[in-house]
Amino acid sequence: MSVSAEPRPVGVDLQENEENRALVEAIEADNEDLNIRHMPGMIRLTKTGQLVINQASVESRLGRPWETHEFQLAIISYFGEFVEWDDDQIVIAWKH
Image 1 (tube, rainbow, N blue to C red):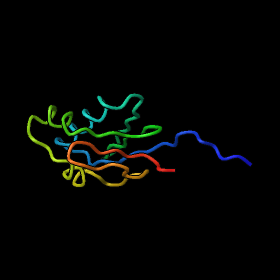
Image 2: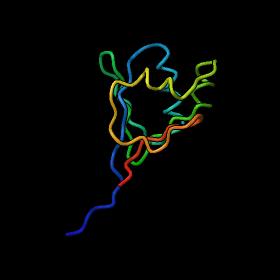
Image 3: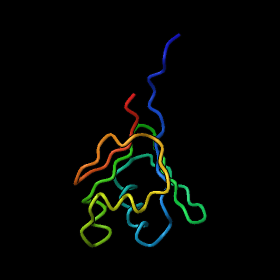
C-alpha cells in the first residue's frame, strides 16, 4: 500500500467584518487558486497546498500598520498547521 503525496487542502474561517475584508483581499492577491466562500458572519478561505498571509499585502489594503498577531483576532477556525508565523508572514500547510 502506498501513501499519496498529493497536497492536501488547508484553510481558515474568518469573521465577516469591514477590517477582515481587507485581510481577505490581501490573502486572495497572494494565493493563486484560492477558494473563497461567504457565509453568514464568516468567510472561508481554502487552498490546496499552503495558504500564505503576507504582512505587507495586508498593510497595503488596510492603509495602516498590521502585525501578524492581529490575525488571531480574525480567526474563527482553521485546518492545516501554522508552519511559519513570524513578523512578516504566516503560512498554513500540512507538515506531513
